Image (cartoon, rainbow, N blue to C red; front, side, top):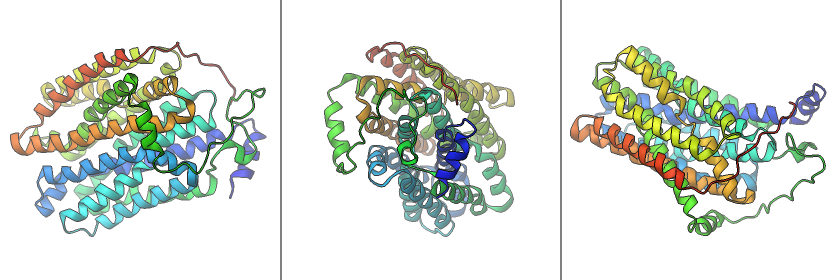
Length: 430
């Protein structure tokens, strides 16, 4: 609608329209991931109002994470068939509907349907696979940086809305706390409808930094069947590198969104820390994550991605071991937020780069979709497992120890992935 005139206006000022696409996709992933992370602030309010146990509520959260991940490979097919704009707008409307309808729920099955299925499917359509597709289509250079920014938006969005949600819950109840994210999703959907285009060629452009002497690759077949992701999975299932990336990303989900994002506020409550300061610590983690993930994208263009992941997983594991002994003081939690937050999802840019390096460009988005499915399966296991641990053992500490140990295993396992040539970054003007 407005993309062509805005593109021309930016061109006259020496700015490529890909940066406008990046900004809108950044907001898309921020808002949809905020909806994904929001239920973490609702564990205690829902339990008090409806009498549901922690593991019952966690079952809906686990289903949400599982669908969020499993949608990834199929989201790539949907984007090819129907275009980025249609998928983004549909996903954000699904997410907003799931949030709004939940204000009227009265039974556990409704929670599972609305916050398990609708949020899982809707957010899964705009997950990290969207970031990988946009970075591949719209950028020939600065991809690592772009992936870092989009990954940071996804992870940070899951955390930065939580202090506001906690404050609204304390003042007005959990139903009102849904409103900011609901409105944000609808506004971003409107932006996407007006400005998002599928590829640079739709506006007579080439990808940012594309070599003018190299012709564009032919467009992929848009009629790929919905069985194609399963065919791709079958074709890479014999690759040891794929399973190393899948397994380590499973641990990534196990040790981040499924555990800390979902249960941190409840964990702090066990140590006498109120919801609002606990949510503020999560926001602090989100702030450090924003810096760490963008930095990780920059580093992934310059250094061996396996070694980066070794350090990310290793340091995260040590921070999880330390958390139960932090005494949950301001100093202790701030120290945890800094070390843990800097690599909350800093693992994503190096993992995407490894997928791109080891597999064909045409299938990289779909293959990363399956690797990302591993991440969300890990999140689902941690979301439900930690809730069950809390219900049965009255403590989250065993879950923290298990996640920390898994991170140390992942740090060692990632070195088993085949080495690739050191990536190089070529400068380009905006």
